[in-house]
Length: 410
Picture 1: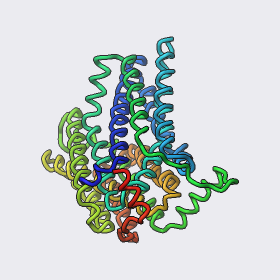
Picture 2: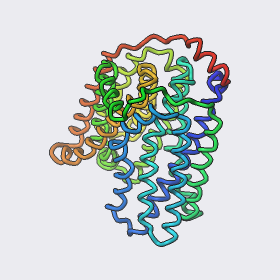
Picture 3: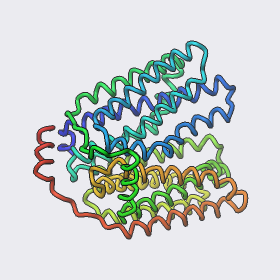
Protein backbone atom coordinates (compact mmCIF):
# COMPACT_ATOMS: atom_id res chain seq x y z
CA UNK A 1 0.00 0.00 0.00
CA UNK A 2 2.86 2.38 0.83
CA UNK A 3 4.40 1.78 -2.59
CA UNK A 4 1.06 2.58 -4.23
CA UNK A 5 0.84 6.01 -2.60
CA UNK A 6 4.39 6.69 -3.72
CA UNK A 7 3.14 6.37 -7.30
CA UNK A 8 2.47 9.94 -8.49
CA UNK A 9 0.06 8.83 -11.21
CA UNK A 10 -2.13 7.02 -8.70
CA UNK A 11 -2.13 10.03 -6.35
CA UNK A 12 -3.22 12.33 -9.17
CA UNK A 13 -5.96 9.98 -10.40
CA UNK A 14 -7.36 9.38 -6.91
CA UNK A 15 -7.33 13.14 -6.14
CA UNK A 16 -9.22 13.86 -9.36
CA UNK A 17 -11.66 11.04 -8.56
CA UNK A 18 -12.32 12.61 -5.16
CA UNK A 19 -13.23 15.95 -6.73
CA UNK A 20 -15.40 14.20 -9.31
CA UNK A 21 -17.25 12.17 -6.67
CA UNK A 22 -18.11 15.34 -4.75
CA UNK A 23 -19.28 16.96 -7.99
CA UNK A 24 -21.38 13.94 -8.99
CA UNK A 25 -23.26 13.85 -5.69
CA UNK A 26 -23.80 17.60 -5.59
CA UNK A 27 -25.16 17.30 -9.13
CA UNK A 28 -27.39 14.30 -8.36
CA UNK A 29 -28.99 15.79 -5.26
CA UNK A 30 -29.17 19.42 -6.37
CA UNK A 31 -30.75 18.62 -9.73
CA UNK A 32 -33.15 16.10 -8.16
CA UNK A 33 -34.41 18.61 -5.59
CA UNK A 34 -34.55 21.43 -8.14
CA UNK A 35 -36.59 19.38 -10.62
CA UNK A 36 -38.97 18.34 -7.82
CA UNK A 37 -39.45 21.99 -6.85
CA UNK A 38 -40.03 23.11 -10.43
CA UNK A 39 -42.48 20.31 -11.31
CA UNK A 40 -44.30 19.85 -8.01
CA UNK A 41 -42.60 16.46 -7.50
CA UNK A 42 -43.79 15.13 -10.87
CA UNK A 43 -42.66 11.45 -10.91
CA UNK A 44 -42.21 11.49 -14.70
CA UNK A 45 -39.80 14.42 -14.57
CA UNK A 46 -37.92 12.85 -11.66
CA UNK A 47 -37.65 9.50 -13.43
CA UNK A 48 -36.31 11.25 -16.55
CA UNK A 49 -33.20 12.18 -14.58
CA UNK A 50 -32.49 8.49 -13.98
CA UNK A 51 -33.14 7.64 -17.64
CA UNK A 52 -30.79 10.40 -18.79
CA UNK A 53 -28.12 9.13 -16.39
CA UNK A 54 -28.37 5.51 -17.53
CA UNK A 55 -29.09 5.78 -21.27
CA UNK A 56 -25.58 6.96 -22.27
CA UNK A 57 -24.14 3.78 -20.75
CA UNK A 58 -25.76 1.79 -23.56
CA UNK A 59 -25.44 4.39 -26.29
CA UNK A 60 -21.89 5.56 -25.67
CA UNK A 61 -20.04 3.01 -23.48
CA UNK A 62 -18.46 1.02 -26.30
CA UNK A 63 -17.92 4.11 -28.46
CA UNK A 64 -16.36 5.86 -25.46
CA UNK A 65 -14.09 2.88 -24.83
CA UNK A 66 -13.00 2.90 -28.47
CA UNK A 67 -12.21 6.62 -28.36
CA UNK A 68 -10.27 6.13 -25.12
CA UNK A 69 -8.17 3.48 -26.90
CA UNK A 70 -7.52 5.87 -29.82
CA UNK A 71 -6.80 9.09 -27.97
CA UNK A 72 -4.23 10.33 -25.48
CA UNK A 73 -5.67 9.21 -22.08
CA UNK A 74 -4.39 12.28 -20.21
CA UNK A 75 -6.02 14.63 -22.71
CA UNK A 76 -9.22 12.54 -22.58
CA UNK A 77 -9.50 12.99 -18.81
CA UNK A 78 -8.73 16.70 -18.90
CA UNK A 79 -11.03 17.38 -21.85
CA UNK A 80 -13.90 15.46 -20.24
CA UNK A 81 -13.74 17.56 -17.07
CA UNK A 82 -13.38 20.80 -19.04
CA UNK A 83 -16.43 19.88 -21.14
CA UNK A 84 -18.40 19.17 -17.97
CA UNK A 85 -17.36 22.52 -16.50
CA UNK A 86 -18.19 24.37 -19.72
CA UNK A 87 -21.62 22.73 -19.95
CA UNK A 88 -22.36 23.78 -16.36
CA UNK A 89 -21.45 27.39 -17.20
CA UNK A 90 -23.83 27.39 -20.18
CA UNK A 91 -26.61 25.82 -18.12
CA UNK A 92 -26.19 28.46 -15.40
CA UNK A 93 -26.78 31.13 -18.04
CA UNK A 94 -29.86 29.32 -19.36
CA UNK A 95 -31.35 28.94 -15.89
CA UNK A 96 -30.72 32.62 -15.24
CA UNK A 97 -32.73 33.25 -18.41
CA UNK A 98 -35.64 31.19 -17.09
CA UNK A 99 -34.98 27.91 -18.93
CA UNK A 100 -34.94 25.56 -15.92
CA UNK A 101 -35.27 22.48 -18.17
CA UNK A 102 -31.59 22.96 -19.04
CA UNK A 103 -30.70 20.98 -15.90
CA UNK A 104 -31.49 17.79 -17.83
CA UNK A 105 -28.72 18.71 -20.27
CA UNK A 106 -26.26 18.95 -17.37
CA UNK A 107 -26.95 15.35 -16.44
CA UNK A 108 -26.78 14.20 -20.06
CA UNK A 109 -23.44 15.87 -20.83
CA UNK A 110 -21.87 14.58 -17.62
CA UNK A 111 -23.13 11.03 -18.28
CA UNK A 112 -21.81 11.04 -21.86
CA UNK A 113 -18.32 12.31 -21.08
CA UNK A 114 -17.99 9.82 -18.22
CA UNK A 115 -18.28 6.99 -20.76
CA UNK A 116 -15.01 8.23 -22.28
CA UNK A 117 -13.19 9.29 -19.11
CA UNK A 118 -13.82 6.07 -17.16
CA UNK A 119 -12.04 3.74 -19.61
CA UNK A 120 -9.25 6.32 -19.95
CA UNK A 121 -8.64 6.01 -16.19
CA UNK A 122 -8.46 2.22 -16.52
CA UNK A 123 -5.94 2.58 -19.36
CA UNK A 124 -3.76 4.77 -17.13
CA UNK A 125 -3.95 2.21 -14.31
CA UNK A 126 -3.00 -0.54 -16.76
CA UNK A 127 0.02 1.41 -17.98
CA UNK A 128 1.37 3.09 -14.84
CA UNK A 129 0.32 0.92 -11.87
CA UNK A 130 2.34 -2.31 -11.42
CA UNK A 131 0.23 -5.46 -11.65
CA UNK A 132 1.00 -6.34 -8.02
CA UNK A 133 -0.64 -3.04 -6.92
CA UNK A 134 -3.69 -3.10 -9.20
CA UNK A 135 -6.00 -4.70 -6.63
CA UNK A 136 -5.03 -2.10 -4.01
CA UNK A 137 -5.55 0.75 -6.50
CA UNK A 138 -8.99 -0.47 -7.55
CA UNK A 139 -9.91 -1.28 -3.95
CA UNK A 140 -9.14 2.23 -2.74
CA UNK A 141 -11.00 3.76 -5.69
CA UNK A 142 -14.03 1.53 -5.02
CA UNK A 143 -13.88 2.31 -1.28
CA UNK A 144 -14.01 6.02 -2.02
CA UNK A 145 -17.10 5.50 -4.18
CA UNK A 146 -18.68 3.43 -1.39
CA UNK A 147 -17.90 6.15 1.13
CA UNK A 148 -19.67 8.70 -1.04
CA UNK A 149 -22.71 6.42 -1.28
CA UNK A 150 -23.01 7.09 2.46
CA UNK A 151 -21.93 10.73 2.78
CA UNK A 152 -22.65 11.93 -0.78
CA UNK A 153 -26.40 12.48 -0.31
CA UNK A 154 -25.71 14.40 2.91
CA UNK A 155 -23.10 16.61 1.23
CA UNK A 156 -25.36 17.25 -1.77
CA UNK A 157 -28.35 18.03 0.44
CA UNK A 158 -26.39 20.45 2.63
CA UNK A 159 -24.93 22.35 -0.32
CA UNK A 160 -28.30 22.66 -2.08
CA UNK A 161 -30.11 23.61 1.14
CA UNK A 162 -27.56 26.31 1.96
CA UNK A 163 -26.76 27.65 -1.49
CA UNK A 164 -29.65 26.87 -3.84
CA UNK A 165 -29.39 25.78 -7.47
CA UNK A 166 -27.25 28.65 -8.82
CA UNK A 167 -24.41 28.30 -6.34
CA UNK A 168 -24.69 24.51 -6.39
CA UNK A 169 -24.00 24.67 -10.13
CA UNK A 170 -21.15 27.09 -9.46
CA UNK A 171 -19.68 24.48 -7.08
CA UNK A 172 -19.92 21.94 -9.90
CA UNK A 173 -18.09 24.29 -12.26
CA UNK A 174 -15.29 24.79 -9.71
CA UNK A 175 -15.01 21.07 -8.87
CA UNK A 176 -14.81 19.91 -12.49
CA UNK A 177 -12.36 22.69 -13.29
CA UNK A 178 -10.21 21.76 -10.29
CA UNK A 179 -10.24 18.11 -11.37
CA UNK A 180 -9.00 19.07 -14.84
CA UNK A 181 -6.30 21.22 -13.24
CA UNK A 182 -5.15 18.35 -11.00
CA UNK A 183 -4.85 16.08 -14.04
CA UNK A 184 -2.27 18.40 -15.60
CA UNK A 185 0.11 16.80 -13.07
CA UNK A 186 -0.12 13.48 -14.92
CA UNK A 187 3.01 12.62 -16.92
CA UNK A 188 3.12 13.41 -20.61
CA UNK A 189 1.38 10.64 -22.52
CA UNK A 190 1.53 9.82 -26.19
CA UNK A 191 -1.36 8.98 -28.44
CA UNK A 192 -1.53 5.21 -29.10
CA UNK A 193 -0.05 4.24 -32.45
CA UNK A 194 -2.66 3.40 -35.10
CA UNK A 195 -2.42 2.51 -38.78
CA UNK A 196 -2.83 5.57 -40.97
CA UNK A 197 -6.02 4.19 -42.54
CA UNK A 198 -7.55 3.07 -39.22
CA UNK A 199 -11.23 4.04 -38.84
CA UNK A 200 -13.25 4.17 -35.66
CA UNK A 201 -15.90 1.69 -36.87
CA UNK A 202 -13.16 -0.71 -37.88
CA UNK A 203 -11.64 -0.47 -34.40
CA UNK A 204 -15.04 -1.02 -32.79
CA UNK A 205 -15.41 -4.23 -34.82
CA UNK A 206 -11.92 -5.28 -33.76
CA UNK A 207 -12.94 -4.71 -30.15
CA UNK A 208 -15.98 -6.96 -30.46
CA UNK A 209 -13.87 -9.62 -32.17
CA UNK A 210 -11.31 -9.39 -29.37
CA UNK A 211 -13.96 -9.93 -26.68
CA UNK A 212 -15.62 -12.79 -28.61
CA UNK A 213 -12.27 -14.53 -29.09
CA UNK A 214 -11.36 -14.32 -25.39
CA UNK A 215 -13.08 -17.06 -23.39
CA UNK A 216 -12.37 -15.38 -20.06
CA UNK A 217 -14.00 -12.13 -21.19
CA UNK A 218 -17.08 -14.00 -22.41
CA UNK A 219 -17.38 -15.76 -19.04
CA UNK A 220 -17.05 -12.45 -17.19
CA UNK A 221 -19.66 -10.90 -19.49
CA UNK A 222 -22.05 -13.76 -18.73
CA UNK A 223 -21.49 -13.42 -14.99
CA UNK A 224 -21.99 -9.63 -15.15
CA UNK A 225 -25.27 -10.04 -17.04
CA UNK A 226 -26.73 -12.62 -14.65
CA UNK A 227 -25.66 -10.76 -11.50
CA UNK A 228 -27.20 -7.58 -12.90
CA UNK A 229 -30.45 -9.34 -13.86
CA UNK A 230 -30.79 -11.06 -10.50
CA UNK A 231 -29.97 -7.90 -8.55
CA UNK A 232 -32.30 -5.76 -10.63
CA UNK A 233 -35.18 -8.19 -10.09
CA UNK A 234 -35.23 -7.48 -6.35
CA UNK A 235 -33.75 -3.98 -6.08
CA UNK A 236 -37.13 -2.17 -6.40
CA UNK A 237 -38.62 -4.64 -3.89
CA UNK A 238 -36.28 -3.91 -0.97
CA UNK A 239 -38.95 -1.73 0.58
CA UNK A 240 -41.30 -4.74 0.81
CA UNK A 241 -38.70 -6.67 2.82
CA UNK A 242 -38.78 -3.80 5.30
CA UNK A 243 -42.54 -3.30 5.41
CA UNK A 244 -43.94 -6.82 4.83
CA UNK A 245 -41.33 -9.15 6.31
CA UNK A 246 -39.91 -6.95 9.09
CA UNK A 247 -43.08 -4.94 9.78
CA UNK A 248 -41.17 -1.65 9.85
CA UNK A 249 -42.01 1.74 8.38
CA UNK A 250 -40.75 2.29 4.83
CA UNK A 251 -38.47 5.07 6.09
CA UNK A 252 -36.36 2.41 7.83
CA UNK A 253 -35.08 1.32 4.40
CA UNK A 254 -32.46 4.08 4.44
CA UNK A 255 -30.68 2.45 7.39
CA UNK A 256 -30.38 -0.85 5.55
CA UNK A 257 -28.90 1.00 2.56
CA UNK A 258 -26.48 2.72 4.94
CA UNK A 259 -25.42 -0.68 6.33
CA UNK A 260 -24.83 -1.90 2.80
CA UNK A 261 -22.74 1.19 2.04
CA UNK A 262 -20.63 0.69 5.18
CA UNK A 263 -20.16 -2.96 4.21
CA UNK A 264 -19.01 -1.92 0.73
CA UNK A 265 -16.53 0.52 2.25
CA UNK A 266 -15.06 -2.19 4.48
CA UNK A 267 -15.11 -4.72 1.64
CA UNK A 268 -13.27 -2.34 -0.64
CA UNK A 269 -10.55 -1.65 1.90
CA UNK A 270 -10.20 -5.36 2.66
CA UNK A 271 -9.97 -6.24 -1.03
CA UNK A 272 -7.35 -3.54 -1.52
CA UNK A 273 -5.20 -5.21 1.12
CA UNK A 274 -5.60 -8.92 0.37
CA UNK A 275 -7.37 -9.58 -2.96
CA UNK A 276 -4.17 -9.96 -4.96
CA UNK A 277 -2.98 -12.77 -2.68
CA UNK A 278 -6.15 -14.88 -2.91
CA UNK A 279 -7.42 -17.42 -5.45
CA UNK A 280 -9.42 -15.18 -7.76
CA UNK A 281 -11.61 -17.90 -9.23
CA UNK A 282 -12.60 -19.38 -5.86
CA UNK A 283 -13.19 -15.95 -4.32
CA UNK A 284 -15.60 -15.05 -7.12
CA UNK A 285 -17.39 -18.40 -6.94
CA UNK A 286 -17.74 -18.29 -3.14
CA UNK A 287 -18.79 -14.64 -3.19
CA UNK A 288 -21.55 -15.14 -5.74
CA UNK A 289 -22.82 -18.27 -3.97
CA UNK A 290 -22.90 -16.34 -0.69
CA UNK A 291 -24.77 -13.51 -2.40
CA UNK A 292 -27.44 -15.89 -3.71
CA UNK A 293 -27.85 -17.53 -0.29
CA UNK A 294 -28.10 -14.16 1.44
CA UNK A 295 -30.96 -13.15 -0.86
CA UNK A 296 -32.95 -16.20 0.23
CA UNK A 297 -32.15 -15.51 3.89
CA UNK A 298 -33.30 -11.90 3.56
CA UNK A 299 -36.57 -12.99 1.98
CA UNK A 300 -37.28 -15.56 4.71
CA UNK A 301 -36.08 -13.47 7.65
CA UNK A 302 -38.54 -11.76 9.98
CA UNK A 303 -35.79 -10.61 12.37
CA UNK A 304 -34.37 -7.12 11.94
CA UNK A 305 -30.95 -8.08 13.30
CA UNK A 306 -30.57 -10.99 10.86
CA UNK A 307 -31.66 -8.95 7.84
CA UNK A 308 -29.37 -6.08 8.87
CA UNK A 309 -26.43 -8.46 9.30
CA UNK A 310 -27.03 -10.00 5.87
CA UNK A 311 -27.29 -6.58 4.23
CA UNK A 312 -23.98 -5.57 5.83
CA UNK A 313 -22.23 -8.80 4.75
CA UNK A 314 -23.66 -8.52 1.23
CA UNK A 315 -22.18 -5.01 0.99
CA UNK A 316 -18.77 -6.40 1.93
CA UNK A 317 -19.02 -9.24 -0.57
CA UNK A 318 -20.35 -7.08 -3.43
CA UNK A 319 -17.45 -4.65 -3.08
CA UNK A 320 -14.98 -7.52 -2.88
CA UNK A 321 -16.35 -9.14 -6.04
CA UNK A 322 -16.48 -5.89 -8.00
CA UNK A 323 -12.86 -5.17 -7.19
CA UNK A 324 -11.69 -8.70 -8.00
CA UNK A 325 -13.58 -8.64 -11.32
CA UNK A 326 -12.19 -5.20 -12.21
CA UNK A 327 -8.69 -6.33 -11.28
CA UNK A 328 -9.13 -9.44 -13.41
CA UNK A 329 -10.27 -7.38 -16.41
CA UNK A 330 -7.16 -5.20 -16.20
CA UNK A 331 -4.95 -8.29 -16.02
CA UNK A 332 -6.67 -10.15 -18.86
CA UNK A 333 -7.00 -7.38 -21.44
CA UNK A 334 -4.17 -6.15 -23.66
CA UNK A 335 -3.45 -2.46 -23.20
CA UNK A 336 -4.56 -1.66 -26.76
CA UNK A 337 -8.06 -3.04 -26.05
CA UNK A 338 -8.68 -1.91 -22.46
CA UNK A 339 -11.19 0.80 -23.37
CA UNK A 340 -13.16 -1.33 -25.81
CA UNK A 341 -13.25 -4.37 -23.52
CA UNK A 342 -14.57 -2.26 -20.65
CA UNK A 343 -17.03 -0.54 -22.96
CA UNK A 344 -18.38 -3.88 -24.16
CA UNK A 345 -18.65 -5.62 -20.77
CA UNK A 346 -19.44 -2.92 -18.19
CA UNK A 347 -22.89 -1.98 -19.59
CA UNK A 348 -24.04 -5.59 -19.30
CA UNK A 349 -24.51 -5.39 -15.54
CA UNK A 350 -26.35 -2.07 -15.79
CA UNK A 351 -28.49 -3.52 -18.58
CA UNK A 352 -29.25 -6.56 -16.45
CA UNK A 353 -30.22 -4.37 -13.50
CA UNK A 354 -32.57 -2.27 -15.63
CA UNK A 355 -34.11 -5.35 -17.27
CA UNK A 356 -34.59 -7.02 -13.89
CA UNK A 357 -36.09 -3.86 -12.42
CA UNK A 358 -38.54 -3.63 -15.32
CA UNK A 359 -39.68 -7.23 -14.70
CA UNK A 360 -39.75 -7.17 -10.91
CA UNK A 361 -43.24 -5.74 -10.53
CA UNK A 362 -44.76 -8.24 -12.96
CA UNK A 363 -42.99 -11.19 -11.31
CA UNK A 364 -44.09 -10.09 -7.84
CA UNK A 365 -47.72 -9.72 -8.95
CA UNK A 366 -47.64 -13.17 -10.54
CA UNK A 367 -45.98 -14.92 -7.58
CA UNK A 368 -44.99 -13.86 -4.05
CA UNK A 369 -42.19 -11.85 -2.50
CA UNK A 370 -40.34 -14.98 -1.36
CA UNK A 371 -40.66 -16.64 -4.78
CA UNK A 372 -39.40 -13.49 -6.53
CA UNK A 373 -36.36 -13.34 -4.26
CA UNK A 374 -35.84 -17.08 -4.84
CA UNK A 375 -35.80 -16.55 -8.62
CA UNK A 376 -33.28 -13.75 -8.15
CA UNK A 377 -31.09 -16.02 -6.01
CA UNK A 378 -31.22 -18.79 -8.64
CA UNK A 379 -30.18 -16.39 -11.42
CA UNK A 380 -27.24 -15.09 -9.39
CA UNK A 381 -26.27 -18.63 -8.36
CA UNK A 382 -26.03 -19.52 -12.06
CA UNK A 383 -23.47 -16.72 -12.48
CA UNK A 384 -21.16 -18.50 -10.02
CA UNK A 385 -20.59 -21.36 -12.46
CA UNK A 386 -19.24 -18.96 -15.07
CA UNK A 387 -16.48 -18.04 -12.63
CA UNK A 388 -15.31 -21.64 -12.24
CA UNK A 389 -14.44 -21.68 -15.93
CA UNK A 390 -12.08 -18.70 -15.68
CA UNK A 391 -8.40 -19.17 -16.41
CA UNK A 392 -6.61 -16.68 -14.19
CA UNK A 393 -3.09 -15.72 -15.31
CA UNK A 394 -0.26 -15.83 -12.83
CA UNK A 395 1.07 -12.52 -11.65
CA UNK A 396 3.84 -11.33 -13.93
CA UNK A 397 6.86 -9.34 -12.85
CA UNK A 398 6.93 -5.82 -14.32
CA UNK A 399 8.80 -5.61 -17.56
CA UNK A 400 12.01 -3.61 -17.48
CA UNK A 401 10.40 -0.75 -19.39
CA UNK A 402 7.37 -0.57 -17.12
CA UNK A 403 9.53 -0.83 -13.99
CA UNK A 404 11.63 2.13 -15.12
CA UNK A 405 8.48 4.14 -15.87
CA UNK A 406 7.08 3.43 -12.39
CA UNK A 407 10.35 4.34 -10.71
CA UNK A 408 10.47 7.61 -12.65
CA UNK A 409 6.96 8.52 -11.52
CA UNK A 410 7.49 7.82 -7.82
